[in-house]
Image (cartoon, rainbow, N blue to C red; front, side, top):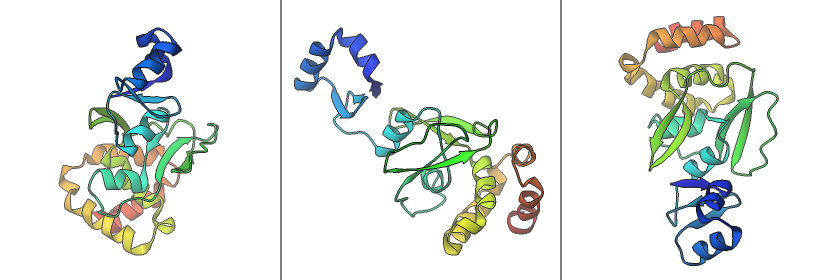
Amino acid sequence: MLFTYSQCKEKYGSQYQLNKAIKNAEIYQLEKGVYSDRKRESEICVISFKYPCAVLTLNSAFYYYGLTDTIPEKYILATERGAAKITDGRVIQKFENSGTVQLGAVDVEYQDNILHIYDRERLLLELLRNKTKLPFDYYKEVLSNFRKIIEELNMQDIQDYAYELPKSAMIMELLQLEVL
C-alpha cells in the first residue's frame, strides 16, 4: 500500500523514526514523497497515487482495461485546464475543460492500491474524440475491442457523457458510424 510523507511522519512520529524504519526495511521510499510497505509497487499505481486529481486516460487506460496489448511508453493523465504542469518525464498531461475532467472517472482497486481512471464508457468517447491524434492501426485495434464489449457498456452513460463533452455532434456521429 502507498503512503504520503505526511502519513508516514504521522505513523512514525518524527523524521528520525521514519529514517530508522526505512533503514530497517519496515517501509520503503519509492520516490520523493511516495512510500510503500512493499519493496516494489506498480508504476501505474505510483503515478495515480502521486497525482490524485488527475485521471488516467487514453493509452494508459486502454491497456489497463485490456483493450490493447500495446504497453504505453508514457502515462497519459487528464487534468483541468488550469492545473499545475506535471513535470514527471513518465507522464503526458492532457488538459480538459473545467467540469469535464471527473466526468466518468472511477476509482478501481489494482494491486492493493487505487487507480483514478476513466470508466470504459468515457474511454470510448475519448477514443473517438482523439481519432486523428492516434495511429490508425492502434485506433482500429482499440475500436475493434470496444465493439466486442459493446453489450457490456452502459449506452445511457455514453450518451450523457457525449453531450457534456466538446464536439458532441461529431462524437455521436462517429459512435453511430463506427461503433454501433
